[in-house]
Length: 100
Image (tube, rainbow, N blue to C red; front, side, top):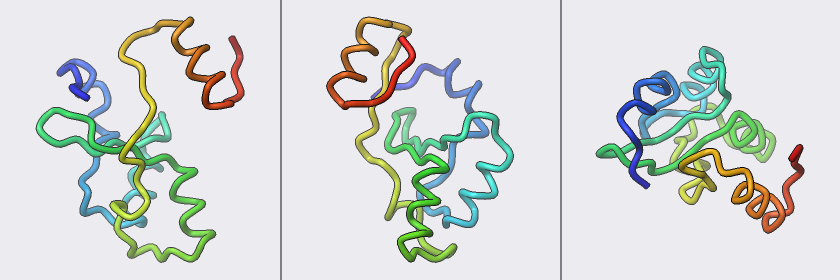
């Protein structure tokens, strides 16, 4: 999953390290507009972590010292461009709600 340099610059505050704890991830989520964090290695998307992922982990007993590696999504669904037909197909396949 290669990421364009321009996209990385726009989302630089959303990029975290795999070594972050849930507490550090929550602090970072508090500072960003889009409530998703990305783990990037060598310009490639490695994983994604949402505020919902963190909340569910805590509700399931994870501590604030837990590594984000344990709960990050290492197979995130993503699209490289705005393709409404492709997005509709993904939403239908994954049974996600949509507003198309």
